[in-house]
Amino acid sequence: MDKLLIRGGKPLKGQIPVSGAKNAALPLQAACLLTDEKLTLTNLPLLADITTMNRLLAQHGVEVHINGRDAFGSSGRSVELDANEIFNTTAPYDLVRKMRASVLVLGPLLARFGQAKVSLPGGCAIGTRPVDLHIKGLQAMGAQIDIEGGYILARAPQGGLVGAEFVFPQVSVGATENLMMAATLAKGETVLVNAAREPEIGDLARCLIAMGAEIEGIGSDRLVIKGKDRLHGATYAVLPDRIEAGTFAMAAAITGGELELLGAKLDDLKAVAKTLAAANVKVSETANGLLVSATAGELVGVDVMTEPFPGFPTDLQAQMMALMCVAKGASMITETIFENRFMHVPELARMGANITVHGSSALVRGVPRLTGAPVMATDLRASVSLVLAGLAAQGETVVNRIYHLDRGYERIEHKLAACGADMERVKEAD
Ligand code: EPZ
Image (cartoon, rainbow, N blue to C red):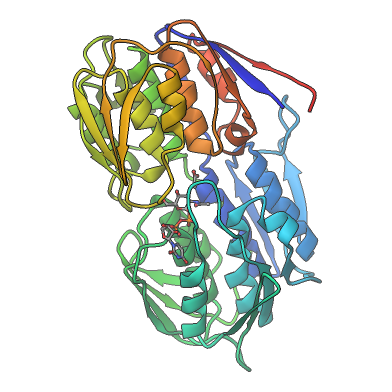
């Protein structure tokens, strides 16, 4: 298993290109199942999760053509997905358990083929993460759903899914995406109330519109979708990854450096920019993205609460906590989205951080410096928070189990090293 070796204490300076967003790309890939014509996606990030989704689609019968292989030899920047001949509407346990976003094939398969069998994803490191809202929403559209042997067995009524109004009792990104995709091929109008407003939802909606769907309310919490008999092919570019951009913004801040994040959009990071400004980190727009700069020793503690968009994202909570570990004063960080998203706390503590957890809040008392240590984490964002801590720490940090990082950060060690980070990947036989 690969490790990252980081020798901390170097301020980062330079430019980092922001990759396409993983969490936008995954639903966009699943959307290919809605049409018998070709969907071409560009600006895809080179990540393990993208490959897993391609593998899942291929076993349904999707022809997957990857273009633009780069020097690193992993999957490409652009992919053509042709779901003309689907021969299997089952998403098996082995693939779904590897990646929860696999459940996003449920809505499209059910809407186009009238049936789908998708493994229940089960819990994961950050929480129990049920999929009851995906199921209830599809039931509201007339689907009959049974749970059998760990699988969701879904059937549409004769004549297909029927548009409905569905009020989300709680905001869910994935359920909004699944229902929006299903609704594009349902009979009549679907209204999704209290829908998620994350930029990735808007990206999916815009791609579906390019495929012939009719969707109103993008960016609001009320989406109105008028069903069509069929959708057609399209070419669509994945939006830049706001979470990757936010992570690098915090890397600039924690090292007292200055980074220009090429392609980053302020509109997608307003709550983060506001929080960073309160912590004494400058964030400004440039012609090509965002410029983030901080002066060593001037960081101050701020309170943060995670919320659905446009609030502060849960996917940047661990990184913000790493930053607060070395700020002056105290910071209260409250996680409201997932019940178990503080796994980075004991590892940060091993690097000298002073953090006390009370239920869903963590009180971080800033320390003058962290010290390098061997660390590991069991999810993506927790892992990257340890990378940030390592960049600021005195001495050497070894981040173990970095396959989590590879699920969500494209060549992170290259991007950071190009800006002065002293870090390298150490390959180890499994
Ligand atoms: C998406 O997960 C992201 N994943 C997550 O990114 C992100 O943390 C999360 O949204 C919140 O922003 C992808 O987009 C692929 P939710 P998702 O449904 O859709 C509860 C990362 O690090 N809930 O919005 O699974 C759920 O348990 C990741 O890149 C139900 O109760 O998240 C959670 O508490 C991890 N029933 C809350 O809602 C349901 O049916 C929000 O979950 C669905 C969700």
